[in-house]
Length: 346
Ligand code: GTP
Image (cartoon, rainbow, N blue to C red; front, side, top):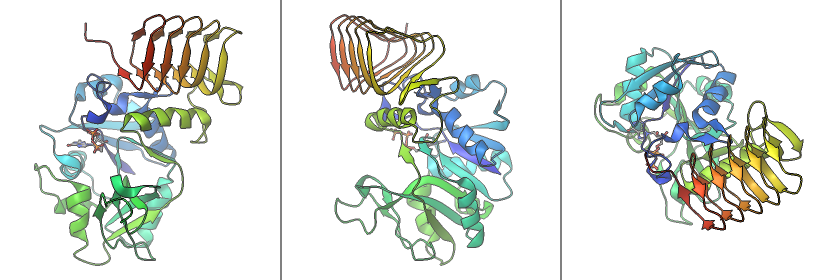
């Protein structure tokens, strides 16, 4: 089956991390997020993916120079201007000559959803489009989707005020679409699949369905969620090791080849230490993902944070709830809280 993956957004909520790296190519536990998503799709039988590109498209082509990943054929649909989530799907599907039902995935959703089950649900109901739903504690920031017992969508309620949502099942950003849906999306015009295409399909009964599932699901698009995704992946929430080649030294403590942790350093799970990183002596690291070649100095404390490759935490520095971009250096004895840091362009 083919899939269109929407990866054209600017990822404004993750700035400055996304100024030079598009959100889908940011790493989660030392693997680019999009690679994780492609592996997930491949496990569920997807053989061809059209990447719907807009922002920093060259970064994707450079990342997958062979137009292939783990046996999945990759194609690139670069929008001349942002077409929104619906316009982008139409543009990408037209380019790929989609002529049978296909998946559409937001490029910032980390999930264990069984895509085959979503397609089977869609087929059983002879739906025109089927949406994956997940349950969240606070649906007020999401598109809420109440359904009838058989899964047919009743309504779309976008970002309901707290306490007023008709249900806590929300649109999780993965869909199965029949090619006929494409005829309902104007070509070359910015439009939203969530706010325009799907609500308009409710004009006629029996077209739009939604499947609830209770597997793991997270939208990685905000700093808090981006950090949470690391902790979840390292803790095994996806049912997989956090990254190929890592070894679990003790429960929740993973080391990649060449990582050196001084025996006097305390690691509190979940922790991933990347290739050739050096930690300690006397450091204290908790709930943190450390990239390749990073250094955490003598007596430093690092909590609930993410260090991209080459980042350095100086001696006795104290870092919590931070993302340190590639090669960022935290000076000796500095205290850093709730920060997203990147190096200035050279
Ligand atoms: P924010 O700017 O932080 O809201 O992030 P975003 O740009 O990723 O937007 P959002 O999270 O709402 O987008 C959901 C998914 O759709 C992401 O995977 C985006 O990459 C993608 N997306 C959003 N707008 C467009 C668009 O105009 N074109 C394409 N191709 N993809 C888009």
